[in-house]
Structure formats: C-alpha cells, structure tokens
Image (cartoon, rainbow, N blue to C red):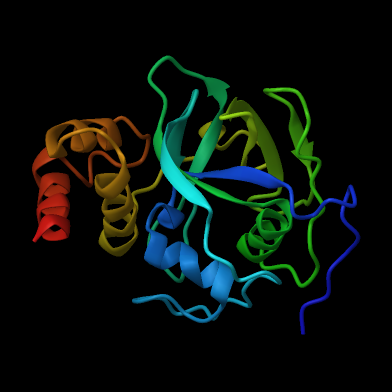
Amino acid sequence: MITYGQPVTSDVTELVWYACYGSNCSPQRFRAYLEGGSPPGGTHVHRGARDASPPVDDGPITFPHAVCFRGHSVGWGGSPAFLEHGLTDSGGLGRRYLITREQFEDILAQENRLDTSLPVDAHRPVGDRQLVANRPYGQVLTLPPVDRYPVLTFTSPEPPELREPGPPSAAYLGTIVRGLVEVQPLDADQIASRLLEASGVAPSWDHASIAGLIAQTLD
C-alpha cells in the first residue's frame, strides 16, 4: 500500500495546473494516474491518486523549454520525453490539467515509481526548480501562472539535453500525438513539424511518418 508524507501546507485541495509533455498528454493515459490501473496498451499498473476526481479543466500549453527524448523506457520500448533546462523561443507542445496539489504530488510520486508522496510548494517564483527526489522526474519546475493558478511540471534533475538522444517508440509518440491533436490549436502539419524539433525524434522519424501517426489518431 502506498504511504504518503505530510503536505507542504494544509490546503491540499488548492488547484494547480499540471503541465505535461509526454504520454500524459493523452487523457486516457493520464486517467490511470488518478484512478489507478493500467491504461490501454500499458504494462504498468498505477496505484492511482488519493483523490481520483477528474481534472477540473484542461487546455493547451507551449513550454518555454524544448522537449527532448533520452534514455530508454522498457515499458514503452523507446526513449521517454524530458523537458530541457535551457530556455528556447520555440518551446515544446503540451497539455495542462487543472487538478489539486495533492493529486499533482501523487502523480509525481507515481512517475518516479515511489511508494511515498513528494510534497511540493506550489507557490515558488516562476522559473524556480524544486529538487524533490533523485529520480528521473525528480525536479519540479514552476511555469508562468494561467488564470491565476500555479503551473507546475517536472523533468530530470540533471539537464537532459546533455545526454545522448534516442528515438521514441511508435506507441509512445502516438500517445503523445493523440493528446496534442485533441487540445492544440494547430493543424496536423504544424504538430508534426513541432514534434520533429524535439531532439531524438529525427532521424528515426520524419514528417511523413509522424503525419501517419496523426492520421491514425484522426481516423
């Protein structure tokens, strides 16, 4: 059974935007982190959050950082996504979900395969980085607020852009694509072009092959 630590403040129900750039861009995939279980096509059984309520709202986001693909995920059979530490004019695409801070902490713990929660301060200055665990996604980044709610995401503690790039699998990239097509105000060509900007995608993937994934999503 999962055990949880004490929250940073007493108000664990305060709302925050969770900004994601990987497979959680797909609501079907993201739901498993709240409700528990294994998402379609997944192999890992998620514990779920203490509060399994669905997000209050969601929407698109463009990060002030690039997305890159690094390392190897056994479950996905390819390189997972990370958010680079350096700033960029043309940032990565993602999706944001309005959830409670407690839910964010529970998602963060599950992403890092930990049995204890990872308390987070949701009110750090924009650009602040909180090292909450020496794990693959153990650093929380504060982004500019949206509708007066804090925006939080997480990535690796060390700059992932310094590591060797690797290609994402079709299953993983397809899951990301499905979420982006649903929420981003861009056409298929624009989404394919933006994904190709992410380090690690090319040369294994090109515009035509990504467009094929998008076409499958739209069928």
